[in-house]
Each structure stands twice: as structure tokens, then as C-alpha cells.
Image 1 (cartoon, rainbow, N blue to C red):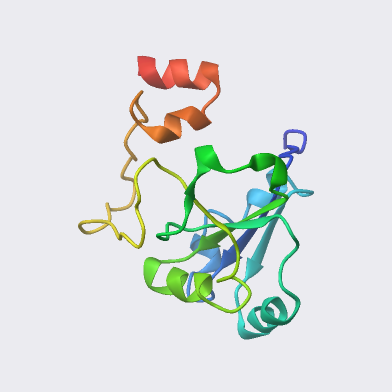
Image 2: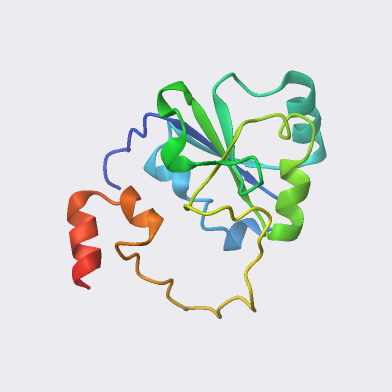
Length: 154
């Protein structure tokens, strides 16, 4: 394995129990950054713990709700942890609206308000490639200059 990555921000990935761990692409992520990435199964005990104790100050939830702030506008110097939900849309909303999670500030990726939007059609089959980010794609800003140039040239 390469040396562990230092992300500068903690990442908590909550995997819904109906999402098989063996099919989750989030499961191996702590291997890349063991100090910064944690994958936790969302279950009743963990839900009660968060509802009772809350999450540390500076924790933000990545979830496309109406009140979510675009990632480019988030005051990142104030963010200590980002929570991601690893689940289908039907389960993600239940996690995001649960006590302890519903109170978190929210951020969204993308430039338009994508609140509560599910994909327009059936999901692509196994092996389908996602679209390549282009200059108008807001996710291209997340790529470093070399990767952006490589993606643009492709």
C-alpha cells in the first residue's frame, strides 16, 4: 500500500445496514487514510449514541437538502469532520433526518440545488462508466491541475 494519506479533515462514512458491506466501495477507504477516514455501520445503537451525544462541533453532513450549502461556499477552516451516507436514496433520507444528524449543517456537491433529487432513470448497469468531468462540471474544481488537464484532454 502507498503511505497513508493525510486529508486534513476527518471523514465519517455511515453505511446503512441494508447496504452489503461486501458491495460498498467505502469499506476499503480507511486503508488509504486510517487516521482520517472511519466507516461505521448505521444501526439503532449508533443512532441512539449520536442522538444522545451528538457529533463534535465542526461536523458537516454531505447531503443535498434545500438548506445545503454548495461545497465551494463552505467555510472549510471551520470544518473538522464531514459525514457521508453510504446507502440508497430511500435509506439516506432516514439517516439524514434522524436525531443528531438533522441538526448538522449541510453541504452539497454541485452548483445547482439538487435537494432530494433521485436519478432520473434506472441506474446504469454494472461496469458503466461515469461521465468524464468537463470544464462546466463543478466536480472538475475538485481535481488538481494535472488531473484536470488529463481529464480535459481525454
